[in-house]
Amino acid sequence: MNLLLSVVFSLASFFQTITTDITRSLNEGNTVGLSSFLDAQVEVSIADFEATVSKAEAIAQLKKFFVKNPVKSFTQAHQGNSKGNDSTYIIGNLNTQNGIFRVYIYIKIDAGKLFIQEIRFDNEK
Picture 1 (cartoon, rainbow, N blue to C red):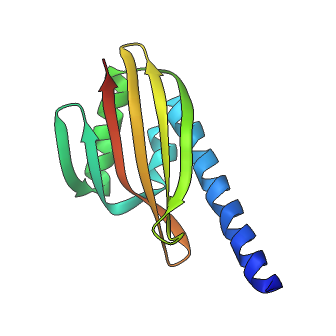
Picture 2 (spheres, rainbow, N blue to C red):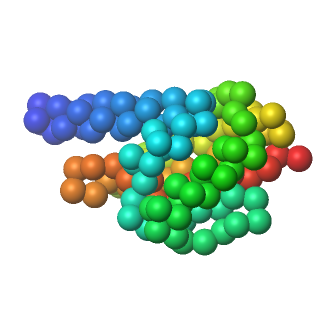
């Protein structure tokens, strides 16, 4: 029982550290920071672009977005685990010079590492 609790708390701490790094990268508009967490294939939805793309293409789309929309701040609204604790998500608001975007990020655990599998920026009008 103690081992199970230890594993659960370690996993929660691991998720928290990674999500803090992702949140910081969003707050800074830091594509390099986000890129270290991207999976080999990522579902990207930004403005009129929506596709499952390679990590390299996801990085290019994120760079393009941050150049067009310089970040003022990111505020995390929700975070939680889903699907039997093998994934987590972050939902928040990205305040940019061109408006506010609702951000959804789905993160999956694979072989003990966390990978962003989906990232979405929806314009809040």
